[in-house]
Image (tube, rainbow, N blue to C red):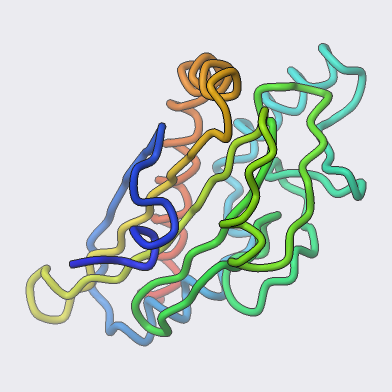
Length: 198
């Protein structure tokens, strides 16, 4: 089964996948996905705080993009989303009730010094090829292959570098943050499950 994410980044340099089975109708799970907010992620705040501290120690300030917006440590940004969690991602594609894909472009390995370029939707995201950056997608995919009355909710992060030096830098950074990133994703999945089963 080809997903929207497959159409955007088919062969990522780095990827991480997590899933959870939720006993709830598809409509409730989808609603929980599209209304998830940072206030639902209290358990992930220590992870955001560690990253903030690392940025401050190295660069003297927290990470921001080129418009002064904070990244995913806990500050809400406005990235032109129509649906989905209020994080600093831009919505790239949506298949209502089935899959939501969001994207981000940056140099996240440059703690304290990343200037994440802005872009306007899927076409700009796909066309971006400036060397020294990476493009990332983050999705939620609802699958019916669990037992009746249950939805298997999958989230996957895919990252594709725009040049060999960016791939090497991202690889070093990925080894450091992969575990923490995975824990944040698990917190998100559990928060969605809790919302959908209330």
